[in-house]
Length: 107
Length: 123
Image 1 (cartoon, chains in turn brown, purple):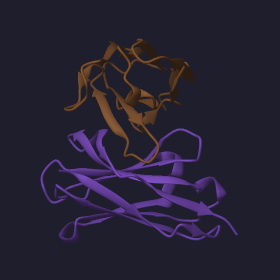
Image 2 (cartoon, one colour):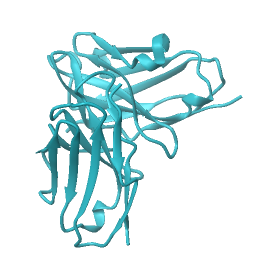
Image 3 (cartoon, helix red, strand yellow):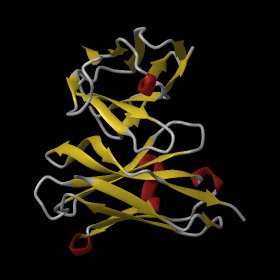
């Protein structure tokens, strides 16, 4: 299975700041990577697919980059509603696998 | 507007079979290209893809659960189902269903999710 390693697992930031979340794959997955946002009491939300393509409705302050084994989710100018847990997921091969998550909290 | 909602027993005993239902709207599982997947998440832990089913009945299961998983669908009632046999405490988790984007029957990513249903396996 392709192992997905996210870092950091925990991140504290203030509204208005920018944050970077890393996701590393145990083998090359081209750009077959998605990012999700998870908030308590809400349905999980797809933010980005194909490594860098914003899903319809995803604010432009979110961006994704990378290919191969190294990927980054960038959130610029944090808004209060961005504080959540973020997961990456590879779909290069089955079984589909997720990173362990990054919890973004308000500093 | 795509919506999904999971339902299940809440609690069940070890060795029993878990049966979950995903009721959805905004798409049809009889339409070419449509798929639904099941994903679970133990409390405080990460996400695990379990299985996917496509409009034509093709399915993909996570090999880690071997033959314990069965996915099926009822197209006329806009429902998908997941059965997990021989459950134990390790199957305690929140179970999600999700509309699945794929390519040539391979599941890719999940663009709409249900809110999840919590399942506890306990004697």
